[in-house]
Image 1 (cartoon, one colour):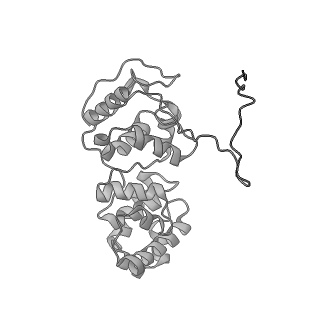
Image 2 (cartoon, one colour):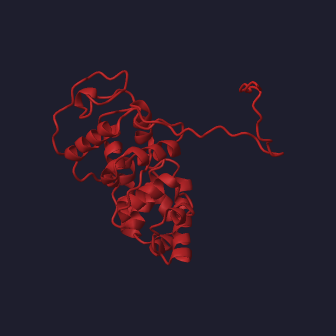
Image 3 (cartoon, rainbow, N blue to C red):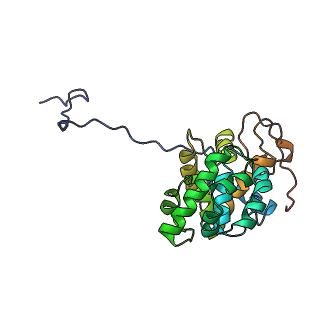
Amino acid sequence: MTKPKSKKDAVRAPRKRGTTRRSPVRRPKTKYSPVEIEEMFRRFAVQRPEPEGELAHTNPFTLLVAVVLSAQATDAGVNKATPALFTAADTPQAMLALGEEKVGQCIRTIGLWRNKAKNVIALSKALVEEHGGVVPADRDALTSLPGVGRKTANVVLNMAFGQPTMAVDTHVFRIGNRIGLAPGKTPDQVEATLVRVIPEHYLRHAHHWLILHGRYVCKARKPDCEACVIADICKYPEKTASEPAPLVAL
């Protein structure tokens, strides 16, 4: 009687030349159950039923420009600089006519204003020449524009066109990692986990809720846990409150 072969003796299928054995891809995991995430975003929805972005704009084009200008700058700082700019030019055609020098004069108070002025003119030119002066409602088309990255495209798609996108800025990235909602080493990893775990009926406003929560409550230096509406759900090991703040619509 032949003895059964051990695992070490088991015959393995020959590996094709030039190939390597791949380990399975592990997706980042959230620390929360579906029930906890549902309750988390239910509370955000009660607190801010209709959240809005804080960048001042009048149409999809001015929104796109404002988001481009907000890179490495605050929304408040951008809002101080853009009224004069958007009064003079609120279309790609008008922005091109205004010219790089005058655009730069309008946004001199914003960091990296020289490069941003170049990008505003370049993206305006691309919109006129490639899209008939209309901001496209497509991520690939948006990210092909000068100065427009994935986060900027997601903001525009969400705010201008109502698409359920997840824009991962510094606040969303921090919250995703700090509380374990969507751990990730890159914004793309955090985004991928968030769109996977957040219930579909909350995705439309989810990125605004997380941004505002990070800006005013779960702050970078010192989280205000006493004012947090998800304090009892939060799994941040250094949180200072175990009871949620009263839910008041803002």
